[in-house]
Amino acid sequence: MSVVSATNLISLRLQTQLKRSLNDLGDVYKRLGSGLRINSGADDPAGLALADKLKNEGRLLSVASRNANDGLSYTSSADAGLEEITTLLSRMSELANQGANSLYTITQRSALQTQFEALGSEIVRVANVAQFNGFDSLNNSSDRVIQVGISADASSRITLPSVTAGLGDLGIGTGSTLTYSLTGASIADSMSAAQLAITALTSAIDQVALRRGTVGAAADRLRSAINNISVMRENALAAESQVRDVDVAESVAQLTKLQVLEKSQLALMAQANQDSSLVLKLLGAG
Image (cartoon, rainbow, N blue to C red; front, side):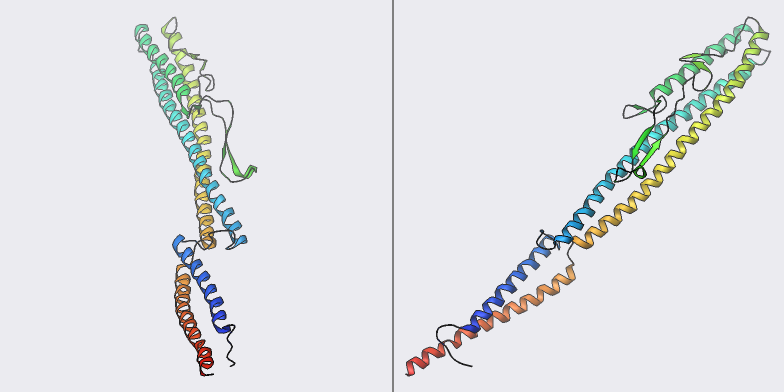
């Protein structure tokens, strides 16, 4: 090996390698410190784009899950109202059965009628107050659309059919007024009226049961959607983690390697700088 005085080539090469090692070491420290493999677009442009896409999907799925749960709460409100209306109709049917019995006086039938009308008024009230977030669940004439996906496609939506449960909808009245009565001009007329009420109330109970089935089917769809969304969100976040997050074991191994390399390069640079003193000795000897 020749000895030159102008340039210490070995030291320069070692400095270049040391700079690279220090840069690599800084990247490893940054990854371990942040817990992320990708801290900027320069680290992995394609990976960053994919990770951001997966992150956005995860956030949209979280919103979709909340939407579906809101829809489930809406159906729960409707079902609870329908359940109460079924109870009221059943009690009205019991009163009608009593009225169909001839062993009640006109005065006693008036008492039955008072309770009968009160129960009818309560059906109207329940149908009007059943709401979720200010939206009627038993007094609406339009469908409710629930966004349960992350796109604008029809497959990302579930439609909740409109449900109405007023007196007119059930065929036992108009508006807030009952069509049927338990009283008449005579006991015989009262019995006939009660018998008509029994038939109408039986049909009304069947109508409510059909509506509860419709609401229940919609609730089942929403529960299924929530379960599916949960799995999709978990997969999206797991995939994002695979792309974005740092592999700690791999980075620690790389850190150890770079630390050893850094120390060896510093030692070699010191040796190379010492070797340059040979030039001075040779010049002095001359």
